[in-house]
Length: 306
Image (tube, rainbow, N blue to C red):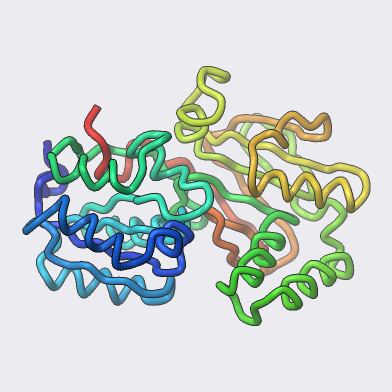
């Protein structure tokens, strides 16, 4: 099977975020040796750097002849490279290197290790499949978008891990301490969607439905061609902080009685501009309002053959 004129056995380029947790645990040299052994001559480029180096490294791999780019990093890193692939017309994938790796799990299997994935690619047990995605004012995301307090806690986490400036424990604590003065512990965003009453909330999570159905709550809802939305307005900053932290690391927060859930193929989120949001875990800012649109079967990605 081929998409965009690219066969699944085309030359490959591996682009690694050296700060990803999996890479730091295994070691960059071990990762390179693993993929070179599995892929042989098909691996025409191997580059590693920080998140900000990814566009340059992808361009280098493309110049080396790579028709398929394999990004190794968290969901945010992989999504950024896939967005470039969509604009420039090459095929990409997602390899698990971060905390949740939801997109990588969707493509390669829930329990697939890097060694398993390298072997599957090397043995040709792959296919290019069309995937759903979301667009936030045109910017892609594959897992979910969040608004309200959650993006600010995501930024604090990035400072703690040294991925944002200023970084470090003190910078992360100062960031969280400033949240109260900005009024983030009270409802501050409004979500509107067709056939859904406007929802004012302090924390809003929007998941790409096909990803959510596949991994988290299969069969719970009948409409995969939509976003799965959950809005939280708990009383008190302590409850909201705990809820937001659980949203960053687990799926159990959805069982809270203070969460309003609904499905929608598109929605608009408004709030104080610039509006803080996180796309696939990456905290950014955008002018209000932000329109979210579901793109069904829109993005070709390399994954394990069915």
